[in-house]
Image 1 (tube, rainbow, N blue to C red):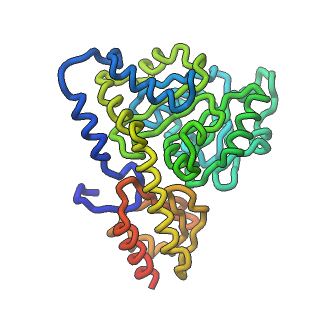
Image 2: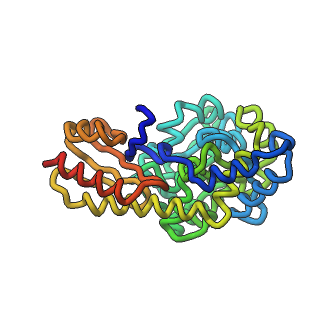
Image 3: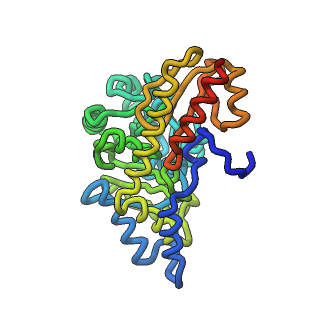
Length: 343
């Protein structure tokens, strides 16, 4: 795919960088300072990020979402531990085996409607406790929002948190799109994450260049994390440039502006296409994703001009993602193209 300015609905990773983020990077691109986060500016931003999740939380900046997820699991799991997650979780589907290979943990997957775990589903994977021949469940990992664009309500997140505590488990939230979930629920970031113990807080899908954070809501879980981050190749030498991006995201709630807009564009697209003959929207449209089934020939025709992914080749299900920079014109033009392609 060439950089010809063409716009599509492939991923919120395809979007541009928010101008406020680029400006923030430029502002710190002066003078010299200590590297690897050993400067007052980065320390202040890490505290700013942590404060979004609680008084005692600790935040650490990393490069990417897979790194954030894998490091979260490395920090809280022993070599014989397992992580319970939905079959559709990013951990299981789109990280090339990194949790198993790098973190060394076994994923205990569960089929879950619309990608959402429940205490009843998690309970099925809690067995053979104390059996030296079996992996021991240690972590419940949920994506908020899910890979299918669906939301956990606050009550659902609270229920999972209570279940985790009752069973001595740790609740991890893959929050690559946590901002989209919080915007959709109209709550603060910490509320969208529920009773999480550790959060992978995403920025790249919400207007940042290359910046994510691992946030330990339970600060004692962060012991030794500085070494894990370095050992796992996720310690940035020029850390102030990651910090600047997060300062821009948090100050004045840029995260809410960007995520709310992306959600609104997905809702607009769903409304425009909901009753079009030959097209079926397959998932609840709750954040910035629209899933639909189209005839394969129509999908192939549309992809010539509008980049997007086929989610399930067998079912013919496609995924359309909206971003912070998706415009109403983008949505309306694409919806018109879909209607035309369907005849």
